[in-house]
Image 1: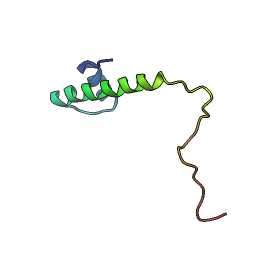
Image 2: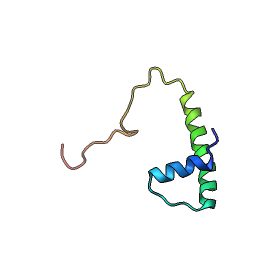
Image 3: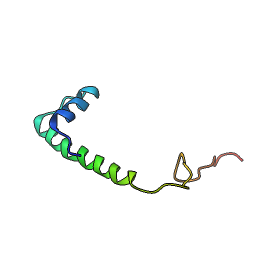
Image 4: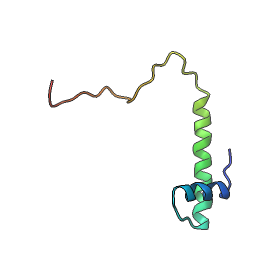
Length: 64
């Protein structure tokens, strides 16, 4: 999905960011690449994979 400069401008407005023209062009490409990667991830088969809140098992190291 290729994002236009208008999409980037809209997202910047929502985030209350003021972007220059060259930044809009650069972010358009970068955000498009991120969305393409997310589309690839959505194609993965995650049936049987338990949801997790973090990748590593973390425990309190100060108290038992």
